[in-house]
Length: 242
Image (cartoon, rainbow, N blue to C red; front, side):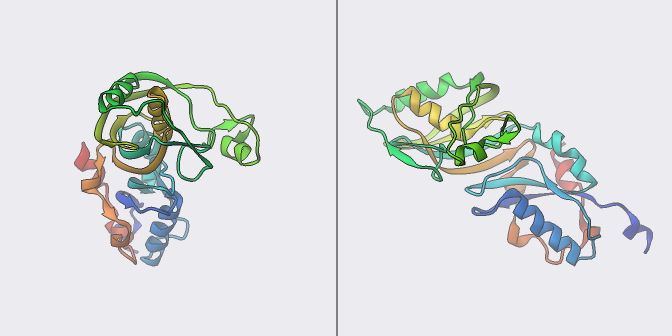
């Protein structure tokens, strides 16, 4: 091998994660393409911030020694565009759970919605959804909930920088959220709905930003080279955001 080939792999690519795949599915695909391009079989590939299969958008994929930057990437401000159905509630706070219709005493106006959103901006206490990866007595909350146990998680502090109402026509609400690490958008949809005496089930979620990484700087998963030459892996995405 020449000196160039001996250099340790270190790089970041920003993928626009498609619906239906887990974040680790994307990492596995990238790893497979790197190995096909000549990378070591044990090349590390991770990500900075999980997106559920029902969510799409910015997924920061960390390659090789860049995987050590996971905490630094995850600490960045997040941006989300999400749609909420205010006419129902769900056991999971999204479309995967068992849903129940909610009929409010009066249909909330846009002003009602904007007032409810304003109450959740700032440093707030948020109760995570029962179907989450948070551990309860050593077990994941979602595992306990799926086993039929009642799971009520304690509220925890999160920071929400802004919530903009993009569109509202009963029962569908679309909001643009900028927030800090640990914020559950499913919980936010539920809580905004509760503020106006309605339901709140997330029907769509798209992450638009993770720190300096945005959709504009992302690539479609299908556009990640296959095979992926490890010598072309760079830190350009990170340096561009500095």
